[in-house]
Image (cartoon, rainbow, N blue to C red; front, side):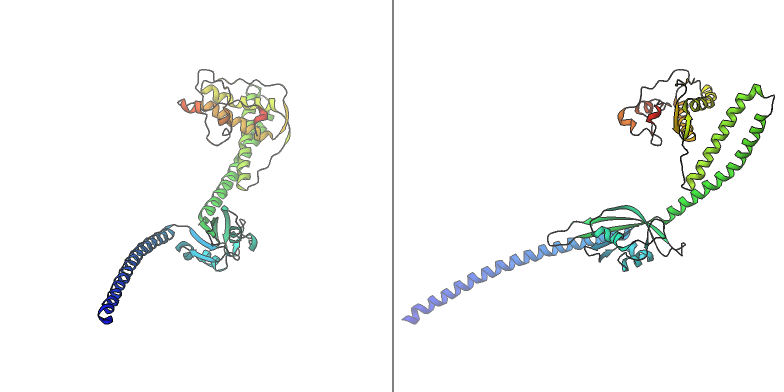
Amino acid sequence: MIRMIFLPLVMSAIAVTAYAVAGIVLRQRQRLLHSEHELAQTLAENMRRQRLLDEVLAAVGIGVWVVDAEGRTVLTNKAMQADPALAALTETAGHDGLYLADGSCPVPPPLSPVSRAISGSTIADELYWVGDPADQAQQRAYTVGAHGIRAGEGEDGGSILTFVDVTTLISALAAKDNFVATVSHELRTPLTSILGYLELVLDEPDHEEIQAELLVVHRNAQHLLGLVNDLIAVASERVELSLEDTDLAKLLTEVVDSTTPKAATNGIQLVLDVEQPLPARVDPNRIRQVVGNLLSNAIKYSQGGGTDHSSGTKERGRACLFDHGFRGGHERRRAGAGVHEVLPVSAVP
């Protein structure tokens, strides 16, 4: 009786349990398959992004160097690896073979771009040289930038350093300075001769009727010689001010007198209204150059046959007044007309 009743019941219970367990296993397997599919898609997307990143890093022409929080190399791109100077730099963690902007003073390890980057400093286009200073033909110049990597939870972060080769640009600038210096020296010789002969003519009698014109020629020749000397100074990076007690009224009169013929040709009349005398301690050659340039621009961009008055520059434009090529908004709207500003001497920096 017991076998006939309980045995089927036990078998039925076992079958129901097996069916329930099989259903649970099947659902878990389906969930696992779905998770595996999602992981495969995520992995494929990550691999696609990694390939894209690798292609971008390989395509850019600048060296990219990624370091961890300890300064150890994490990643370098093809440009960094292909450049022998930069490749050697990564092997020494940037502590050897790196020189300051003068190309001869080694960079102390605590001040190297890597050390500064991992300490949290941001570097923006600073000039460094890589290579032995004794072999200048092989030494390379780079502008270096560094940007920190924000650390995630449980991560230490790091930094990204970029190296842009500017050796060709530096060489071109040096060639330009050499050219300017050479041409300036060549110009100074004939100008000195012209001034010498002008002074001889001025010392001779019987030139009273053209004395004023000769003085104007002499003054402008001296001004031109000063400009040539300025070019030489700029090429050698030695621009100095020679301050002396000067009568600005007399200086301005001379500049206006020398500019008047050009203004008259354009149908413009120059009127000088200045206190007499107007003493100041300035570099007369520099002030003469500034005022001369202002008058030349005013004549160039002012319409002839009328009177051109200036009411000053708006505050927004005044900050840009001494920028190269700046023209006021009103003057830009006028065809052929430019800015003609009258500034108090105290406002000229």
